[in-house]
Amino acid sequence: MTSAAASAPPAASTTAEPSSAPARRPLLDWRIRFGALSLVWGFSFLFIKVGNEAFAPLYVTFGRMLFGTAVLLVTLVVKRERLPRGVRVWGHLAVAAFFLNALPFSLFAYAELTIPSTLAGICNAASPLWGMLLAVVVVSDDRPTRQRVAGLGLGFIGVLIVLGAWQGFSGQDPLGTALALIASASYAVGWQYVRRTLSDTGHSHLSVSGGQLLLGTVQLAVVAPVFAPAPTSFPVLPLLSVLALGALGTGVAFLIQYGLVDEVGPTTAMMVTYFVPVIATTAGVAILGEHLTWNTPVGALIVLIGAALTQRRSGSRAPSGGRTRTVRVHRTGS
Image 1 (cartoon, helix red, strand yellow):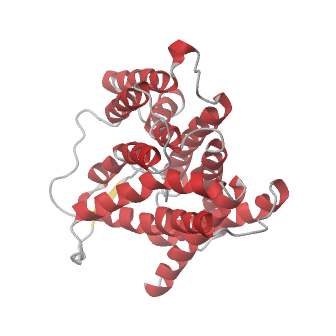
Image 2 (cartoon, rainbow, N blue to C red):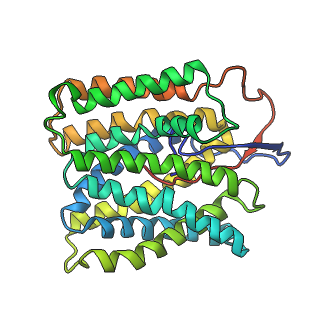
Image 3 (cartoon, one colour):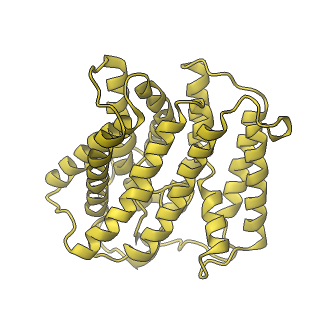
């Protein structure tokens, strides 16, 4: 759930000069692609859970990054685009890859060793809340309104309800939950970093994202053999889950998201964030048979309402005419 996300969609954006290039009409209506993206990212948490049955979490993440990178590199070749150039750009991409891909993807995989995929999907929805908190504490040029601060407080209450705070968080693994929440916070840190360092590189979104995922894959290739046992067998179902997680949930999902942002703008595209936990919860309960108590959906709804409030900016409306180019924070996956 990229770059991120997340509620700044998996992406934050800055608006540049309108593009005068004529737009090629997509084959599928944006609503169909929006629904597909919601499904892919929602099912990503189920894919992680199934992948963990046969592979160490770091190798689930490595496979995810590898297959996702392959999709973007093939797309670069087809479109005859190149990866970014310049040591400075690659240095910033390495940091972005760590905070937006390698670290959160790995933390979610480890978290799902001990918590349900439904809870992981809901923790992912807390990313906008972390982003708002970061804006309050660190970012001086993004002053929060009372409404956004209220959203932050409401979202925090929702998290406590999801975790069952009144009963001492019974039934939830504290470490696994903490890892999932740290993963969602990592997205917020990555968004702010990319916003400040990679918002004007002169490279296309596809080029920058391809480089970012490639560096994240290299990072996992170095770390995984050191800290996790290498797979000795490749059962079909877990392998297919990792393949789907990478090729669909990371690679193809980015391409869909990029097209949505370009066509309908980041404000509409970011709404996918609020469908992901719903789909993740539905998939976890219906397919994996995970148990769901009343406080989980109620708390999740409150988290989503709080997250939506943190994204509202008073007096700032997107221009109604013209097509804009956006500089995105590339989460490429949930």
